[in-house]
Length: 322
Image 1 (cartoon, rainbow, N blue to C red):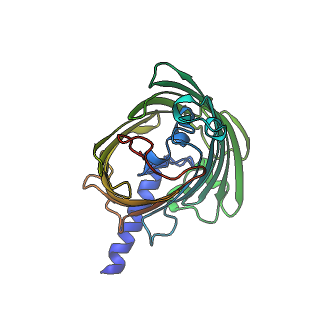
Image 2: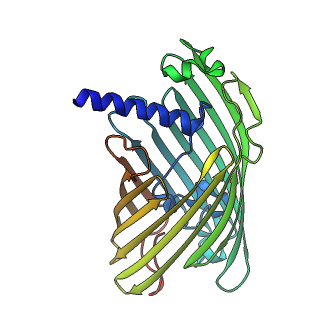
């Protein structure tokens, strides 16, 4: 009986791969803790929280061969913080980041390097307009020995059975953001050129641009309690639109708990803590009833290291994380 259930699960996984990736080697990369990685999704938000190292590991549907696994590492440098500005988030003018991501999905492995630059213009005493741009390089490898039965029937991919093939894509990301100490709203586009600058084997049929809207609000309710809310909307012409929300409660500037929901896909529970310059977070995500009920959930681990200062308040009403 268990073997029968396992075979059904593998079949559902294959169907999900075919539907979500359209046999193009491209899948949407979900991050439940997206509010901790704003600068990757929108270059304008590079350095919004200061100079940091960030990373996460996301393991989906553990126990199923070929299930998605994502690894991410980034370094952000705020030049205002480096110069010793009293309030670099408001007074600083430039920031730079380097982002590294590896995504494994069935027969495909994608390695991505993105370099982002952001410039800030002070609009009022408390508001900044941020503009950002990024250059991304992606190397995508197809393992022809790991193709599913359905992929073997695809004329574009089946010609690579039994071999290893590679393609490389260079593109641009752009972004715009209005930021305040307690809230932000942003709009960004990944792959402005639609992935049209490519070389290597031709097993990818296009890589459409993706539009992203992010917004957040945070407020200190008492000296030991703060609430943080974030939203994320994504739109790409060959995939369904996706809306995500999460809500966290930060206690004593040390421990947070939260919940998140990706509409029509999944719900998650979040927990994390801060200690000195270190921030750690964990998410357990499980599919909703209308999604594919694959065995096991999604585990996501996050770490952030502040380079120049501890995670601590500089004002009594400040909230120290998103």
